[in-house]
Length: 471
Image 1 (cartoon, one colour):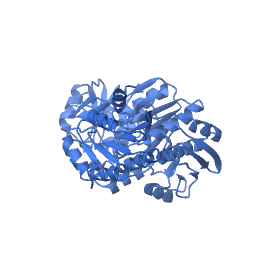
Image 2 (image 1 turned 45 degrees about the horizontal axis):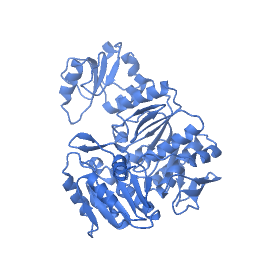
Image 3 (image 1 turned 60 degrees about the horizontal axis):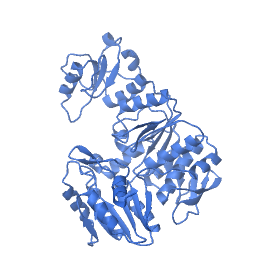
Image 4 (image 1 turned 120 degrees about the vertical axis):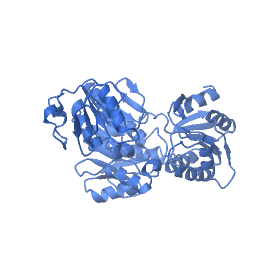
């Protein structure tokens, strides 16, 4: 593709008339990539920017997009914001402007909501791609996820592959990092969904206020179809800002809501714009009532028949790592991804409703991430469970004992046991169960690794439980 075509939507700050006829075969922001006849995006970061630019040129880059001029032997295209330019250029390069994308953002519930939306769409014969924490899915293809929202060039390449494979809709999780780093600029969102906004990622955003601001900024367009949680503070702000935003909720006046919710929260009456129907779901918990409501409302406003929505909701599949219930000899084991204070509280409250005996909680916190939530999660675990096992959860480059100590500071009582080894913790927790008890294993969900000092070692909560139970 000619450079002039790639730059048609980009404001360039220097004169580059002499290179507009360059033929660009590759685009990349990774200097180590081989990129014969490539365009390299050089943005400020933790690396030596000049060295990265020189390395990219040595690997075949014929031009560099940058926000300042560097001493390199290659033409440079000066722009105000490299990440912003990269988003639009990637879209042009991969010809993905017309793909139909449903974007879901929020602290908790993104993955489950994305799978519910996909299941509803698939139930009426639509071909759907999914991009999120659990991986990338389309047709019979699965690719593991490195990030909740892939980097922008990878993202548009995935869009292109899905488009060429006949996908009708792409359902993607939109992380706060993706919004802040301008990964989703220019994408054709046919619907944007907000699940909720609670504390997370303060290691990056520093304050909860900034994290909330970034999440809210995803909805800075009155022209988009917006489905937002009216029971959430940020959702309420969006609803007050845009008259066109559609509200869903349980406790606040909403366009879509649920009533007559049973104790397990898997049976209820749903009302979407006065279309009333009964849902008997395979998914437990009030959080899943919200997830189903958000997904159903989205699909309704995309034109899907209410009867088809109802049928799909009553035949949902479990999402791996999201409140998966395992029954064994009158005991219950639940595996869930909850890794925030709000997420942990929600799954513990739901687990309590499903438990006749004691509720045992096993969890840890990730290393090199928001440290402030560790003590809070310790307090939440103590409040809502009878006993806790505190252990490792992707310690990364931190000492796992220090992480456990941070969690432990949230406990006022001594109703916990701590051990760094997660397998040992699960084995001890399962052996402690008596008839009627429930063990909920939180934090890793469907992950198939544990991240220790930069190495992702094979590990799965599901495999560990299966091995211990012999199932």
